[in-house]
Image (tube, rainbow, N blue to C red; front, top):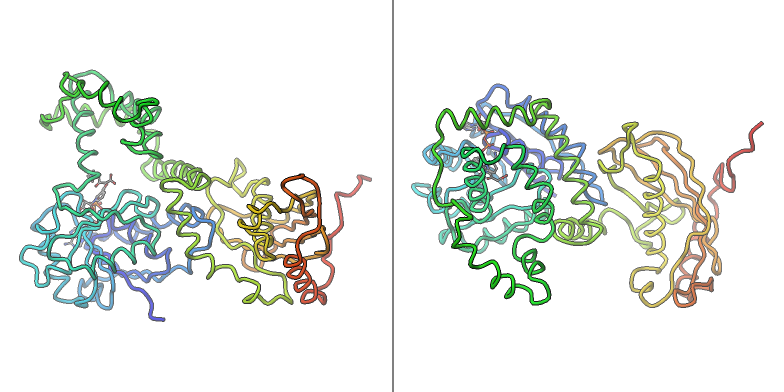
Length: 489
Ligand SMILES: NC(=O)C1=CN([C@@H]2O[C@H](COP(=O)(O)OP(=O)(O)OC[C@H]3O[C@@H](n4cnc5c(N)ncnc54)[C@H](O)[C@@H]3O)[C@@H](O)[C@H]2O)C=CC1
Ligand SMILES: C[N+](C)(C)CC(=O)CC(=O)[O-]
């Protein structure tokens, strides 16, 4: 398979985020940025991405790609299948950049622009191959947030849009196809409206930057992460839903609740006032610290949404399902004479504790995921469970042998000690590379979900367990299996 190569043209806040997203998804990344500090800055973004992105999923990311920096733009775009432009938001600079890129890049490569506001047709003006350039507008931090506004013009053909969607989806993004080009696309229209209103509130002395941020993050900001605007307001309409909501609150739009159409002038006085308030609010943290706090919160919230299979969480789950078959072997692909790989993933940020390592309860969480996978392998999958049979765990013994940290890749291999009738006894070993981190021994009983009592499993499950038992019969009994905590003295 040929290696995927991305070129990053402009490696600042956004280009650095794109570089991290590509690299951690296995792409080689070639960067062009005239800033002599670009390598350091991208290195710091990458450090943050490595601790946060891999653990967002319940499946492993591919091996990291190779990162290189180039003084020559032509060299940076050579061989790249995706070129992401993230130079400053100036149309003349973007045009100059596209001309230089197109003089050197592959004609079939996709050139995505991170522009926050320019329409694709504006970006394409004067280009050698206008149809090769499309808006792919990301959200900061690009390595964590799923949304990409994919905005084509009439000059982009269906094949390019299709390929762009596929590649972005493969990188774990949610490409939102914006069908009608418009200044500032969809999301930045909102952000600009909210930003203008906030500027007025500060300028008029109504609220400080801190009070405005509290008004957002203590209330509607949390709501918006899960239901957006329309679904939230539908619920707010009570049993009569959206119609009632509009009847009640529609007229307010004509009341003096909004100043949105006027833009406050960015006088030195206003800039100083906002910068000083912002320093007072958050100046005790460095920007990198704030980024880490933001990433911790985002990962925890998105993983909570995963558990609900909702919104951004559903996007992450869909990505996990796509890579699962590749990441975890089924019974026909596994070497059954050895312990079976039942978990491969990175340690998520929200699995770590005050000691700075994976907390004890998450060892059980990981082993429980391995047990679920083993159940799936023997035929106790979601459709079987829906039909009324399952396993309950009756006893567990975990030994914690070594530490794991956020972003570390871990895997669990499972030996079946007993799989007969209603009894299932599993011995999990958790590794980081070649290092044994923990063992978990679990005794389970097959049950009827109707009676909640133990009962024998059907022949298909018995058969799968017998197949594994035969294959693993030569494996030695694990040291510590059957043991419990020793009596003191
Ligand atoms: N910062 C944000 O929140 C977001 C920004 N964007 C968009 O991303 C683009 C980049 O913005 P930021 O990363 O925030 O800016 P930035 O100022 O952090 O980074 C721009 C980078 O481009 C480099 N650069 C300047 N001239 C260049 C050239 N001729 N060739 C290659 N690199 C060059 C600079 O050295 C700098 O590293 C803009 O179009 C912006 O609208 C999109 C989403 C969010
Ligand atoms: C402020 N901004 C217009 C650059 C914001 C964006 O484009 C998206 C984001 O990440 O908020």
